[in-house]
Image (spheres, rainbow, N blue to C red):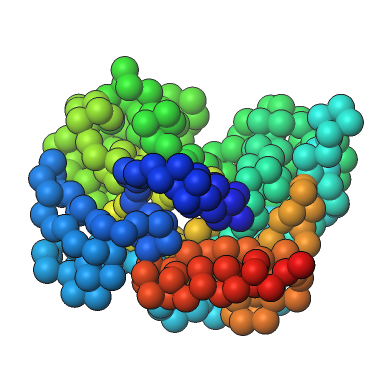
Length: 355
């Protein structure tokens, strides 16, 4: 909804001032909502230009077709898992207050083994605060977070240190989360340095090779540095680092939002394959609802630090109960310019009809 408000503001400024807008984005929904013409670039070259409708309806270049084909939201939704399974993570009435400011209030949810639970909501809704409290990067004000029955909130530091190998995180921007002065080998093997009892040092190199190959990177590139890789490759390095300690739960905080749709699709396919092969659970924080629709088993909707709705992905997307959830759905942009044009007409008609 914040994105929708900013785009609406830009539209109003254009109407008032007649200004031009050069919009650089990887979000094809934003393109469909705002652009009159589109310029598609690949490897530093312009490969296609045209009206938004022309480029979407009849893309001429293979790269453009690849981008449009990777747009999420059209696949089959995941079926919910057996709720009789004991949760790997059970959060009960978790709260985080910063003085008088309530960042998280009475949050309760579960994550099953092998399940992806998506956390959605607008900026400031408490999604990232929840992740930080679970990792003890922020201390909870009250409540509990049971990981396999053990309370992360009340856990002593020494016990938490050992348990952290089972809960890893993939951050939004690998440019910020990967140390630019460390080689890929040093980044991926860092967990072995922190937890030396996991693996004998003589085996580190071989394990790093295995991890890089597991995430679709060349093992021979382990001595390169992050700046020598693309954004998608850097995120694969971050995933390899997260996998090094063989976690059971990975928290993904907007882990693909900085990537273009084709690279995004590749990373999601990777995460899906790893979940299938290793039984991983994901707590997937995102604002891209079509992506959530395709990837998650269940959805948790947050507003103002509170969970306002949660359920299987088919229920949340098919028949949301809360107005806030419906507003989030309506604010989600389609990559189809015709769909967005129809939505704009409907908004304008509603605005004109409102006294």
